[in-house]
Length: 190
Ligand code: RP5
Image (cartoon, rainbow, N blue to C red; front, side, top):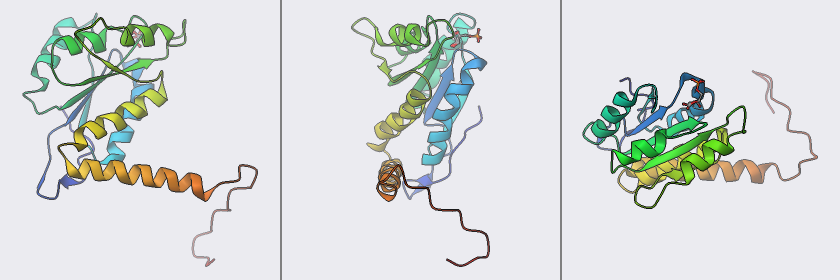
């Protein structure tokens, strides 16, 4: 599987070339949401992979993926699914790695079905459940990075930088009624 986002060296020593996070999703149609998890991990420089693994259409693949993930060096799994969203729970049942679930917004119930399916796991097999849709996908990536940060200082530093920049953007634009500063033309000095 292709590893994405392996930009920074592994904690200043050796570059991490294998995926630390596996982003899986129940259908190719989930990519519109799950791409935000991949984009966020890419911005943080966290090596990750993306793959469609359906709990009901490819159950054997799901078992294989979840059972082999730890040995392959994956440290966190992000699983996105919509509707009767059993992918995160089934994945969590086959691995002791942390599994973060992203409820994909469904057409009929606006993702409430996905949210409850993922969040309401019976005691014994946890799935860390994020918000419905894009926010959940972004936050799953940030939470995965926070988890990885305990072991990988470069990832922890990337999360700190992300937070500081986010704070800086808010503080730099305190008045919502003010027009945003005009973009400078290339070659012109301020
Ligand atoms: C779930 O069913 C997927 O996670 C997706 O959100 C939903 C619809 O899948 P498609 O019919 O678009 O393939 O398994």
